[in-house]
Length: 457
Image 1 (tube, one colour):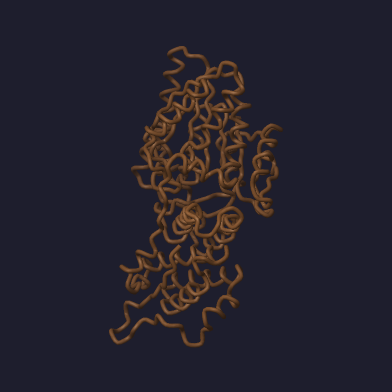
Image 2 (cartoon, one colour):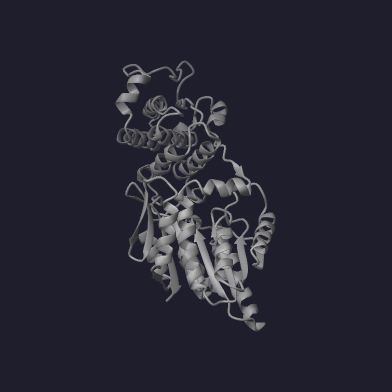
């Protein structure tokens, strides 16, 4: 991460007034700053004061706090310093386009330092990347065990994979299915092509190319796989995907095929669907009225809740199982300071865990931190439809699922054993617990990721 010096100036400033870029009178040196403001609580308070100053267009105060933060957040510092540095970057990006703070001095030069260079992974790189930590592996492991149990006895398993990690879960699932059956079932895999095209981690090949690799892998395990790509996006609540699945289901029944298991695998993807805090454009409402209700008159009443509409639409497909895995945090507030506090008190976790498995200066650490920086900037610097990182806590997803007429199911002993074995491969700080029927990944006792499984009620 490149260190940068944010310098704000006031648009009402006359030409003889020069923005201050030197240490402010009365402020201690950088070394003293580190000891004064070095702990996480002080850094959080500085970030909150800075956010308030930016929102109230107090340019002088914002510049002072940004200067202090810049001096106590070296890019090669400890986990708290690197975390605060990412929030500093995000606040500077917000200041550059907010109110009177739009006059960011030398903004053309600053853009180079503000840019987040996310890596485009090859399939092998991404597979190795997600194996570094339980952040994704926890959900993979719990979900695969639940899917195996729910699809026992079916000759056809149709998996709809809505995953942030580009089907990285699927090879392990295919392997488990192959080992479980003497005659493996046909696997039909459907993915949404444009679901996360600009959201890290990003892949350096097309979904058609990815599908070819997955089909070949399945063949090597004596499993027949059909791979299908549907052009659909979270932006309209996967409306075209829902319509595609509905049509395919009707055709499948009409042609007299045997009963298939329909698996909806949602891995850290549903929180990108606009929630009630987002104003949805009429065109999106229209597409959803067609895909979900076939009743245009109902669109206006439901357009502000595409997330709930999507789940209710899933219920009409009568899936065999829906697996929902996501981050257990709340980043939905429309209040910047509330959102900043929630993000700061959740996203310290990946920075803290990074010190246990990635050496400083490694490429993988740079990739990992760039992905987190992207998330922080999206949460802090953007609003409206551009702010897509709208993570909801487990309790709210439970409420949504029940409202959509699903009921939760407990993970069996096989799932628990698989998760335990997986966590044994990682640092001692990782753990898990059962909350109600669901599994929760923890780091040093703090909730990180939840995994839940649902049947139609």
